[in-house]
Image (cartoon, rainbow, N blue to C red; front, side, top):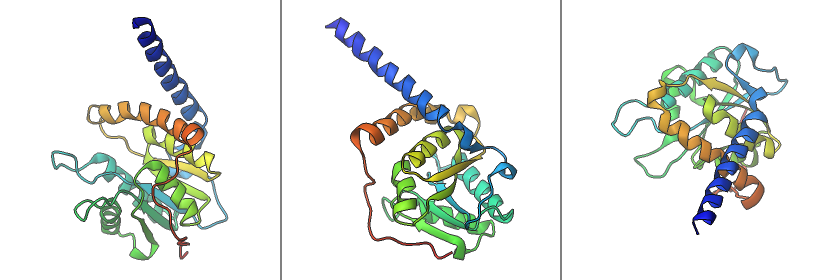
Length: 212
């Protein structure tokens, strides 16, 4: 019995390690720290900002949220983005990630006319897939932190979306250790979702092409 438990744990550990190596190494060339290095495009440039809570559990500002918004606003002001899809969770009327992101972006001077809200971005997979299937985008600049970027790109590649990531600033390491730890397992789940479970977004509906 003990032997089987050990084998099971070792197999699970190997799966996590292999999945993480695959996800990171297959996408790292699409991760950019400097917006000047983003590849040029002949199409209108659309950025997908991946949602997260505006506040931490203790009520203080969430640095992941703040830094993604700051990076998005900077891209717009530098002329690197023409339109935004703000995708996140909208589980209750009191918790609305897309609306919070829109308000924050507009506070930086980004006009309402270049913002589209995706209220069904419940997971990274949902946000990425819906950007193509609902909003008609097969070329994206994704805005998130570096640790999260590899998984978002891995999903994008699976769905034949030509995506790159502009990395938003990471918060202090001590404030993010739990998030980083969870990401190792999230990458493993992404591999299982795409190649084994064939997981689809929880909500798909009528197409809503962007007005750009």
